[in-house]
Length: 150
Image 1 (tube, rainbow, N blue to C red):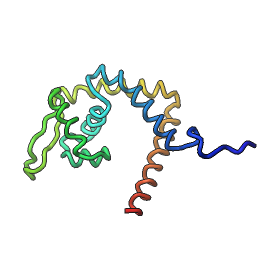
Image 2 (tube, one colour; image 1 turned 45 degrees about the horizontal axis):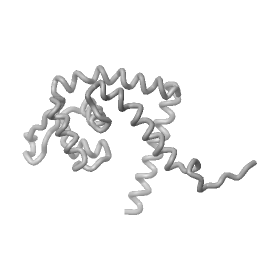
Image 3 (cartoon, rainbow, N blue to C red; image 1 turned 30 degrees about the vertical axis):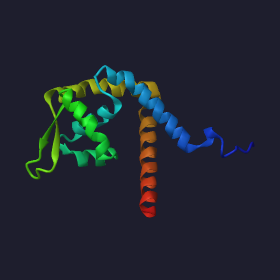
Image 4 (cartoon, rainbow, N blue to C red; image 1 turned 180 degrees about the vertical axis):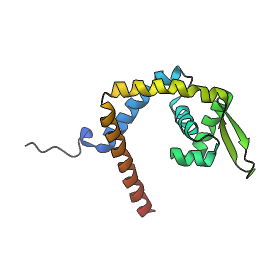
């Protein structure tokens, strides 16, 4: 049995995750262009299709991103006529982000995107489910580690 050098780039988990993430984003790019969306816009739309009318803070928590990074993306979605931003009736300091009819209408096209991604990954439904569960577990453990260091 050959001992592998643990410092080789291809032996690094971080590089495997990083390069797979880049490849996945590149796979989505042309699929989303046909919908008029960028990858960050698509992620926001996915959340809103699941829970319409979230505040920016709720959206940023769900996507695990800083709200400051999401604001320009939401503004571009609003300019494209896919979402509106409204003052919350409960707290006027908060803006509620809501899908427009055009934004809701894109959901059907997204099913085609998801199907194509599953096809290209060629892991089968069970393989993709296992991979997703493993990544969720990894993220959870990393979150726990980060919380203990804070």
